Image 1 (tube, rainbow, N blue to C red):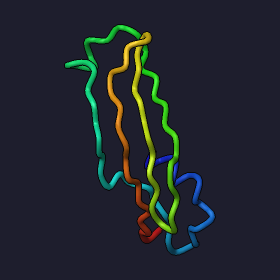
Image 2 (image 1 turned 180 degrees about the vertical axis):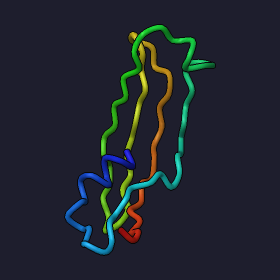
Image 3 (image 1 turned 60 degrees about the vertical axis):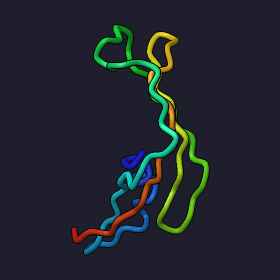
Length: 84
């Protein structure tokens, strides 16, 4: 999700400064399995952007594998400007 935000907002970058997205926090996380590495099927990650501010975003996400819900929650993503 952090990479997604960073890529979507490349236009905010300048020659001397670029923006990167990073996860600031997660909430309402529910674990459906004890370990992800016990799942034999491929992991599928679904994320939906719920809110967008100037430099902050909120996503709802779910991780599934073979029809089993492994993880759900919400994540706050922030843009950070760094020197290029």
